[in-house]
Length: 309
Image (cartoon, rainbow, N blue to C red; front, top):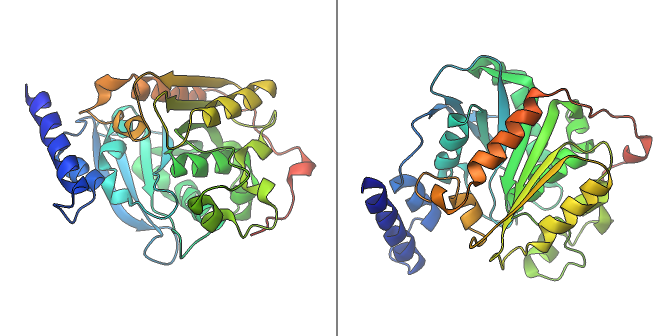
């Protein structure tokens, strides 16, 4: 009964915010009012991984003190022009309760940033993880990435194109796996205002697409979407999964019935977890890959090309 009442209250807050009765975003209201997983806790807030207000991160850990636990870096969405880690505490605690030392970084947004600025920020956050996460019980040799929507794009690009991590001195083989929830992976030609303003200045548009960088060196990948997603259509997930499978990369692809774009992140929460087994399936895949021996090594010189803005 308590969960039902909380879900009802959360929906009311989301509705009121959408109608303009609150200055807070619908997601921030949901994050504030919804129940949290008791198995995870906030261990550090606003740790700096670079200069500037968008270069801080939060760390969540399992309540049972971890020892050399796998590390999950989660990137939130928001069309690369909105979003804040402060609205995703429910995700941090949920993933920490699954046994991951979980890191939620902010990153620069449009118009202050365009491609590839937010990817460079993500790489810098991962460099901070490598250097500091052992303090929180995490194993810097076993990092997995995940994200939702634009954050899924960020996570997948950082996993597939090793140049960003190499640019900050991080060995790409520490990335054991990646998970993308409702992410855009194949969006050429640029046919929306969002993609044109964020990616349109790139000298080589092919370099902006995750599909460009799939190959046998790509890490194992979990891809999920909802069959009712009209914001980022499920074809993105299907296309990337097919391309990775063709390269003999381990892929788990899930299309959840009845879920739309926002549902694939809300399903990570206690309130809406019954909508789909996403948290359990994603966590199981990532944990299994983090425990295994990685084969991801940098041996393909064709991929070592200069990044272009």
